[in-house]
Length: 259
Ligand SMILES: [Fe+2]
Image 1 (tube, rainbow, N blue to C red):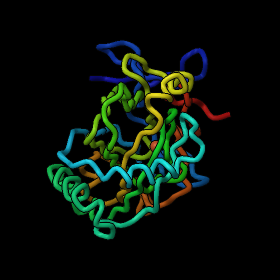
Image 2: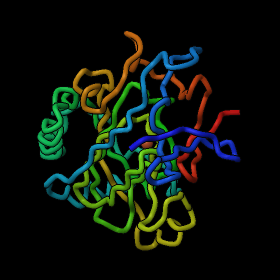
Image 3: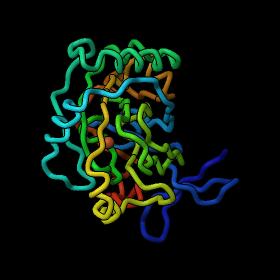
């Protein structure tokens, strides 16, 4: 499929597909750059999103309750830690999930990178669209969803990938690639939908792994381009398209020109 990047009348970056017309995808030309550098001096943003499902057992009820208890804001759109970040092999509670995740990653040649990761228990109702480039540009993310299916999808609008979230869903992606959650049948963020459903669906849980994006196996697996020896190793980086700073629209997930 061939893509062409263009700005629409509202200054949003959109991508046109020869076959499908307008689609919400970043395509090529979007980079994470080092501070104060213009253009593709850092690394590309991967368009690859790997996803599937792993066979794991549910965690004990009391653990999930403790986890939920850490959810202080209760605000749709905000993701909060349900416990500390730990390296693989530190907490026996997560040993089975780690093993299943490593096995899954090995199918894509990325098990070595995953062994270097840390994981964090996370609680939320859902997430508005965002890129994690600013704080996690040196990482790829692996999400293992630990709540039962309730109509929530993980959406990567710029690469046209939608993943129905169910217990055991696993997703590998570039932290810089914009992502967020929407309900089945929708393609934009709406906090009111979560508030209406809050009685039935108070919290959702997942385990988030971060792995080094510049690891050779990840560069290969996520089809990344590194443009310097320092690319993919820094935290404070920014997204650029053809030298222009870009941000992400929190409702649609589309790239926007930064003022
Ligand atoms: Fe995120």
